[in-house]
Length: 491
Ligand code: NAP
Image 1 (cartoon, protein in one colour):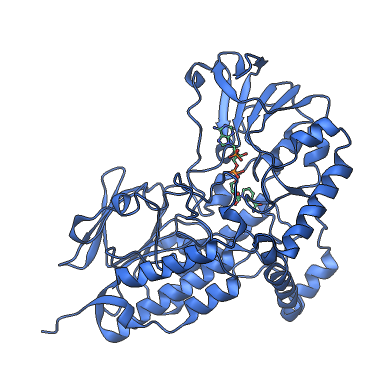
Image 2: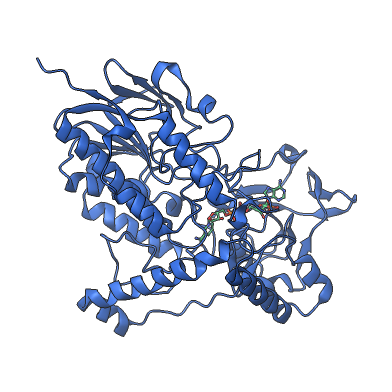
């Protein structure tokens, strides 16, 4: 590899931005970011629905090397997060190396030339020695193929593609889905609409969430005494790591305690036993994401809100017909139905060594080494790849470890004159056997349907250990014996 290999980063979200900053710091300057959207921000650019916010406290949900002493709320809202992400990109002048409106359709590895060729949906080509994917896990909205949807006479949209031109005042709205997005936007829109039917397929475990503001006095202290801000961040991190992480161990004391707390909250918040029964999950707490919102249960008890639990049979031009034949009039359908999460890179037609496609390789479930490298796909590195999602802590922490691991690999390549690096299949397989064994103790493998599992029921999204464990694994010095390498030939 040349001293300064050409590196393409796909995606200008927090991962892509963080990677560009750290690569430059390490002396890699031939960087290009390719972004399908029109600006920086990734998921925070896409998700503009009313009430969009992060349920991880803002001081932890920030790149450690780009802190923000000025967060105004404990749980920051989308506009504030997006502003900080975009300010970070501006501070590092990343627009100079970014091509917006550039969606990659295919990427092909040439082992003789040791380079990737990326082709956009417009047919433009980019060549790069190294490709880093910052696509993440939650970027492709999923809309279920409900019969009759195409004939609906009203307006439909997905929570991650909010139609701000569509005034909801006085509308009859159907919301399908009751996940982490719906729990945030339903309380915001319910007071505005004439009537809201909420289609719930599975009940969720919900905890109350207060959102104390961070006053100017405290912000000033964080600005003047960075140690105070760092201490706050550490306190949040440790609480999540030490206590919250235990919730996800099947049958643990903390899991039982969390169940009791959630049940108590439900009992207090929803006096009507019939509605309470409808809102009681039939699977262990933590199997799906635990929702945190204090306005959710009160909203579901409004006179103009109805929780519909009968399955949807079809959409008709003026509403929704349920399995029992009931006709529910609607002029707007909002899909809070989540994302296509288990394909990872597969939307891009990645072709690695010997013509192997990522889609074929991952036909039975996506796998990677540390969630970052995939055997037979040299010089391809992923951020927030398979088995790196969390239930208990900030995903940005995981992304930072991946960035460090990738920079470490590239530095090793540069130092050793290596032009291609490819994780050995047996190393990747051993890693994945171990994480799936550990997964069996985690609550995600139990009886719920969730976006963490693929169609075969295998958990392909979540990391089964602690973040300390992941940090340790990524921190280890790169062992080149784990990789197949190609060295530069000298003239
Ligand atoms: P989600 O958690 O995957 O929820 C999708 C919802 O749609 C579920 O209630 C699901 O029901 C329902 N659904 C899917 N297909 C359906 C169908 N055919 N018919 C009826 N219902 C259907 O999606 P999300 O709420 O967009 O959240 C996705 C993830 O984004 C979260 O888990 C979280 O990681 C992230 N997020 C984070 C925050 C944050 O504050 N940090 C906020 C929003 C989102 P079932 O449960 O029965 O499958």
